[in-house]
Image (cartoon, rainbow, N blue to C red):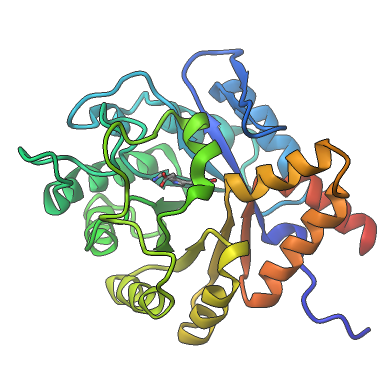
Length: 309
Ligand code: PBG
């Protein structure tokens, strides 16, 4: 009767990794229970996730086609574009969100294009990001989620989507995305680790809380429909501050390293996986997140239903 923060299954979003081909399923060592899949198998998994009652899926592309311009990121037959079509055909009312970034498609693994000095070139990257977002919307994505952290990308993507006739496609902005060690397992899954340097030039310093609110408000001004804080469990204070700063739907991403820590400890018998995952998700909800992105979404939806039938 007096419980305050109870996450609902439909608030959970499952991240998925798309590769090309058919019948392909490649488990990711560093992310127990997660596999890269081809569009046909992703469609089956999305159908199962939908039956489990979760709200949506967040698609990442994994590609061998890498070059300086990230051309494969906006190819109509790219892994994400194909997966969106397959999932939309299989589970029509599941919300399909796509990650918009260049790091899995550039040979250097950075989230934007590089200039002659090897520095990330903010403005030239925007044009490519817009093309990626439009290609995802063309394939049927409901929401595009830019995670590159270039300045001005939300406004550029909004204008690009509108110009392409996709006024109805929403933008979930990775607004407060920190340069975090907890993305390690993800980079193994996506093959997107930077070949040189790190991402501190465009991702945020973990020491900065006030800057997160500034980043969020900037994305709101540029037309974001939802904002995100990432990682989640180590940034609950940031979630709370952002909650107070905007009324937009707020997503929090319980990232790969945060998930794998619990899986690894549970695998050793050191933690109760179900209790630890549910406690974490509940804490993220309590801090103020409306949407929780987690690799444990399907299991957690089942556990939540058992607890609140
Ligand atoms: C791509 C991207 C990353 C994640 C989401 N989008 C990795 C990175 O920035 O290096 C991390 C997700 C996770 O760790 O689960 N820019």
